[in-house]
Image (tube, rainbow, N blue to C red; front, side):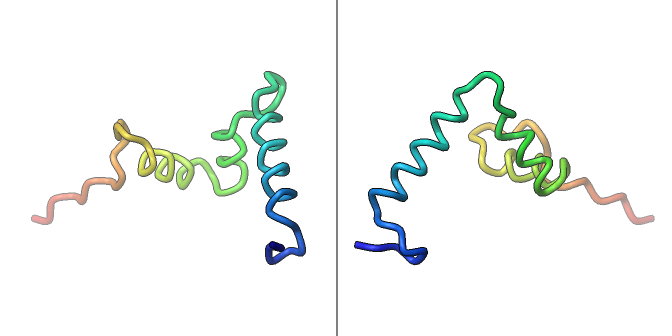
Length: 67
């Protein structure tokens, strides 16, 4: 079976495996830093917080009280 890019499932799986193994290299930039570089630190923090089991960072800033 071929995928949208003309790649077989085996080729796609091997590509994902290679990417995973490259991430184990201690000289590789961590995923969080790559994400921050790609979408910015604020969005990266929100995304990581939303996807993590325990949220240590609030997902939104509290609204100021209206007088």
